[in-house]
Amino acid sequence: MFPERFLWGGAVAANQCEGSYLEDGKGLSIQDVMPHGIKTPRTKEPTPDNMKLIGIDFYHRYQEDIKLFAEMGFKVFRLSIAWSRIFPKGDEETPNEAGLAFYDRVFDECHKYGIEPLVTLSHYETPLYLAEHYDGWLNRKLIGFYERYVRTVFTRYKGKVKYWLTFNEINSILHSPFMSGGINTPKEELTDSQLYQAVHHELVASALATKIAHEIDPEYKVGCMILSMPIYPLSPDPKDVIAAMEADHQNMMFADVHVRGMYPGYMKRYLREHDIEVKFEDGDEELMKKNTVDFVSFSYYMSVCATADPEKNIRGEGNLLGGVPNPTLKASEWGWQIDPRGLRYVLNTLWDRYQKPLFIVENGLGAVDKLVEDKDGNLTVEDDYRIEYMRDHLLQVEEAVEDGVDVMGYTSWGCIDLVSASTAELKKRYGFIYVDRNDDGTGTLNRYKKKSFYWYKDVIASNGESLHK
Ligand code: BGP
Image 1: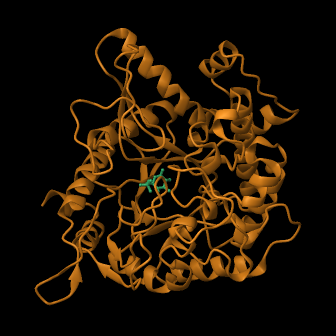
Image 2: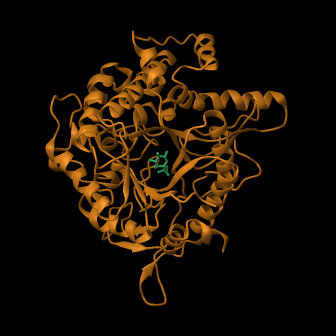
Image 3: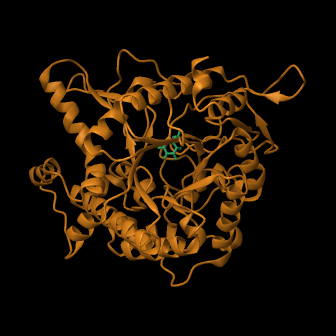
């Protein structure tokens, strides 16, 4: 059984849904020059083929969308603040009032329906100016700019927001330094020392944000956000088991620092043995030690395998991290292997390790949907495949709850169709709500309820009981 106060909801990110990329004083973000996600290099300027420039026009349609979320019974709505709406370049002294006012309106709209906002402070949308003039998180100055930004929003939205996440999928910076860390220097030119220095800056900034949040409002709950992906040994060979453990460390170190307040021993060893130098400044250690997170949040889409055998170590399709495909699992249309039990596994692993409340803030199926007429002549999508995916995953969440794991809530990714992060496509749809917009720019932007809309509504209304029907 799901806990009584389980926070059911859905999740989006500003850059993938808002559009209006220059409206009301917004500055450019790195996403505005990433027309094809991480598949192709950034462009010099925004280009018309970049679907995020219009997105799904959430900027103007948020009232209609939040009303639909309320109809499904959402208790929580995860969204991000576009940093470049608040500080258009990122290094200004004073914020952009029109940007702040927009999120006031969005949060007020949520509260109108009793929906609690869950806010990501940085979701792959560093202001472009900070990327181009400071090389993003490579530069320690970013900590100061981020500090000013988070202080501004923590102060402004006191009483309207309770749950905050510091960096979306913070561990992805090792794999996509531009998208995740606003680092303009091409990945191939970065040394490991530079990359881990940027990681350190984000970890320090995250601890600082946690400190400021608690000072501004002791009721604030701050979480880290990790891209979680179980890494199974490809075979029972102990060498594969160790390979899987070491690969897992590359993700877990981010959560370890956030929860335990220090670099774990295996991480220090990794840095030492790879001649990676990370500069700590006075006070960094103490800051991290004293300002650990209140809860741990994560995305979960897939699992992978690891092996010590170089011949079998072939990277498959998948999200930003990737790994060796699991021969026992099927994959989505985009090659992401589907593994509902992996979610129970992740929940148990994180709970055993930290004993901190856990929040699943992303999970879902990206698929091609077809708009059809239902028997009453209304347009809809018969997305039984999505229902099956989500049911299977939610049943595993329930298993974890039975295992004794403290799960705060579940926000499905892309609760309304939006532009994908890795490939910037609209045809990769995750939503309960279909948005009529296509990758060639056509479409009315009208919203239509899919079959999964009604299914999720029942799940929420029955607090998970209907999953067993
Ligand atoms: C995560 C990101 C999201 C989201 C999701 C699905 O990595 O936090 O922003 O987009 O993955 O990925 P995609 O959009 O590439 O299908």
